Length: 216
Image 1 (spheres, rainbow, N blue to C red):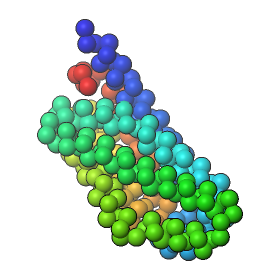
Image 2 (cartoon, helix red, strand yellow):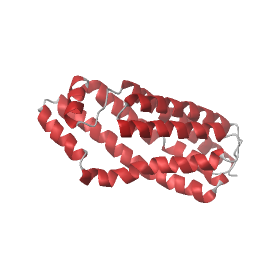
Image 3 (cartoon, helix red, strand yellow):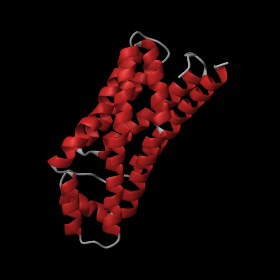
Image 4 (cartoon, helix red, strand yellow):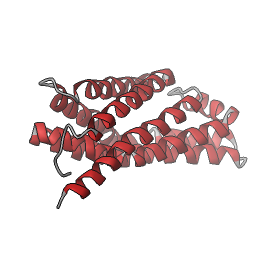
């Protein structure tokens, strides 16, 4: 009796693992250069407001659409290692809120500049967002995504199985995205998101073949 709902969840999760990373890959390819310097970053945004806004809109939409994929990925991880898989699910889902907050703020920054506000005011706005008071709340939840991904990869890749290579792909993609956050080098996340897309397509194909048949 549970076969149809289980199949529906598998199809939804598989679709999410393709559509979410695809939107995020396109968004990152649109993304202008980044820097940690607030004044330099505002100048870049002012020169590429449309690209900046569209990029972060696609990243935001892709992150939200990835939620069913996270559930599917961590369900398989839970089947292999219940405790680690469940922890991965909690950490990755919690991080969706933090990443969404970052993407929406960056959309707001683009809109703030596009309506004609002085760049000095935009610099102050960005500096407030980058302040310790804000990042002390955001940073642990952002890091939760990468810790959760590591737990999921560990659960899926060892011992070897049909999900091993897509799991390792997700892990490599996440490392590159983390590198972009630290170094402000957009190329790293562009490559990382494309690797995640390839891993998502591979994971989805295995999932839909029914290699793992258990209700989510």
